[in-house]
Image 1 (cartoon, helix red, strand yellow):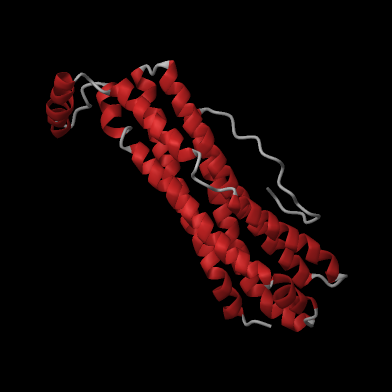
Image 2 (cartoon, helix red, strand yellow):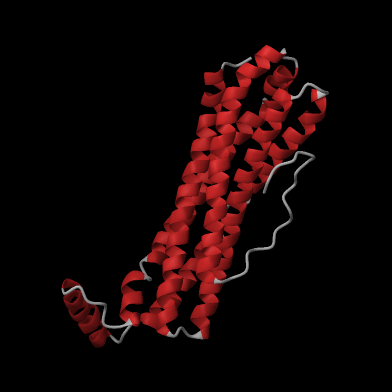
Length: 266
């Protein structure tokens, strides 16, 4: 059986990719939340609200799949823990463990950027159309008045000029973070697929036939990676809540998470 260090070493690239995915998701929520907050004060036209809602809807799906991936990975580790500590028929846990892992792969594969990037480009054009001043006025407000007021510690000239200066740059930032999240998901998917190929034969079957003492040696690293995965899952759930709170839009409706006979809090 692999040593404790070997187990964690094999899983580190996977958990590291999940952590990067969570970090870029946090930044993505910051971007969209800022856009929502600043444009609300500019009396946005229905067309802009529509484009902002569409971009937000796709981002919410993006975040939901990231959360569900981390949740399934946590459930996978919880199921392995049950396998290790169980003294009854351990064979019954194998299908549940593999099912959780396959669901994890499926959710990772659903995290993509193809639909979101065009919607963010549309949003950027819509924001420019709504927020931009006529050329002469724009120069005076954005290049003269607002910098002068900023030096004095005062608020910008108007909500419109503030949104133009602070909300508009958030759209390219959001695109960068969407691409970063998708790239981290693909990196995690590559590592996870390689790990899946030998999972049943090289890992689970060995755990299944270990004596009690041998199983206890495996339990410590499994608990550590379970804790790390659970933290990422909780953080992504929090980001989904932040996105809902800032936009007021309903959460996306997705099929329920599969539990596969293992009790795990969602």
